[in-house]
Image 1: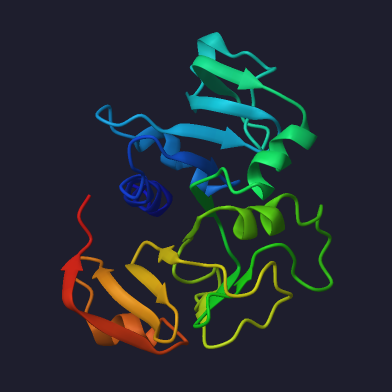
Image 2: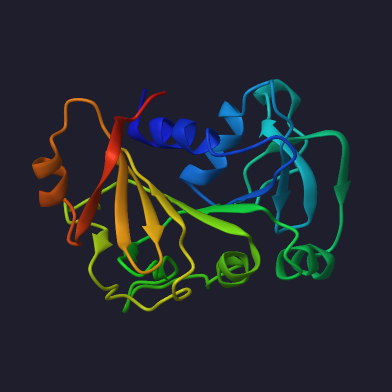
Length: 218
């Protein structure tokens, strides 16, 4: 299983029956494919859908049903379509239980940078700024290091912030980390075969090791 799929599968374990969940562009959207049948999760997409389903079968694509990233999806029975104004009323009104977003950087205080790299063209912040403030819980789903092998979990974000102190949990291909107010980053789970020292070398932030540290179970 590829890194992105591993992360998405672990993210889906965070969902609980009855949760309203928003999945951001990239790795987060893949989590929809790993929601178990024993729970009912309502997926919200900021482009105006409540009740988004998994990826569409290539033989039965409805081009009018897409996620926030423009990828074909399905909609579950009882799902609803609405305009962006209503969609962001749900988000800003605190009706989304969990938002899952990708990131360029996250730091010890739960600050998030995920929308731009200076001197590179970007389409804009999208709904991320509203989601991290409006949702009850913010989960970051990303690879532990970037394409150049540089850590993405830092002592302090360098890139422009999307939001300050709003991240609750970080899930990567190597770790599951809680952002605890007043304590910082608490390592809860680690990838099988990886030592704590190896993980620390790939993390430019202080990690507090949970007493009940577990291996990531998928």
